[in-house]
Length: 172
Image (cartoon, rainbow, N blue to C red; front, side, top):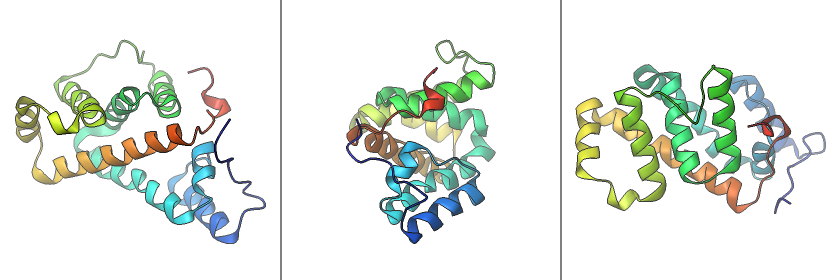
C-alpha cells in the first residue's frame, strides 16, 4: 500500500496537469505510479524528470544500452522493485536476459561504478576512478555521476513512499 496514492490526473490541480502533459508531450513518457505520486508536488516532479535530460546527454558516449545497464545496476543494488523491473523490461524487450548480460569493457565499468555509487560512494576504489578517467573526460564523469544521483533518488523515492509497481511491470 503506497504511503501517498498517485494523483488522479483528471482531478489534479492545473499545475500538476500541465506538468504531466508536458512530460507526455516532450518526453513521450507514460504517467507511471511514481510520476503521478511526484505530481502532488510539480517542482519535485520536474526535478526528477531531469533524468531524461541527463540520459540524452549520456547517450552520445555510452549509448542507450549503456544508460540502461548503468540504471539497472544502480536500481538492483538499491533493491528498488519498480526501477529494477522497469530496466529488466527494457532489456528483455531488446532480446536480452537481464540475469545473464554480456557486457563489454565500458558496460562492465558502468555497472561496477553504478553499484558502488548506490552502495558505498565514500569507498569507491582507486582503480575504478582510474578506469573512469581513462575512459571518460571530466564532463562525462560529471554527467555519469549526476545521472546516478537522480537514479538513486528515484530508487529512494519509490522505496520510501512504497510506490506500487505499475501493472505493466508485473511480469518482470
